[in-house]
Length: 141
Image (tube, rainbow, N blue to C red; front, side):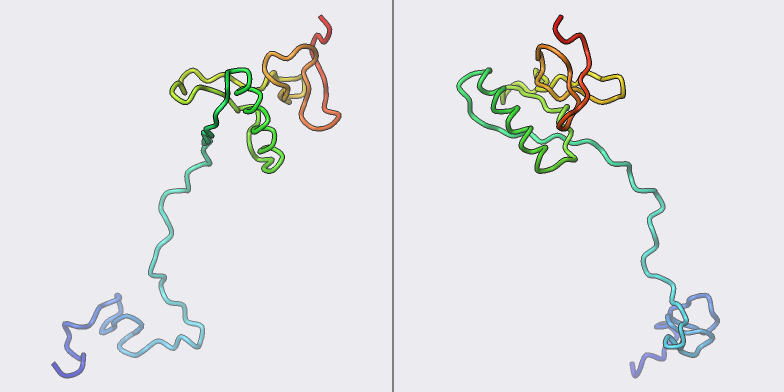
């Protein structure tokens, strides 16, 4: 075949006698600001909402008490580096028993909707996050 003038090689775009980039058989002038149809259409479905994910960090400890202390330290240190982490959702379990995870932090809800960031089972008042955070509860009882 000589050249590409065969009718089999033309793709129609709805314009009579036109192929890609042609209107009515003549080339489009793209320098004049004529817009081409985008090749990739936007997605039809909206983007899914953000989901919560969990990271499991493994470490070695002599017993449950030491493991709890180390896990609280790791969680607090990570929350300082990355404030978007949900510190109250941190939990501890044995490596082979994820279904028996125990919460590391109290998480009690205060009067203004804040959550207690003290370790689980702590004595005294509950405390909101941050220095000078609100304290609430029975305290000394």
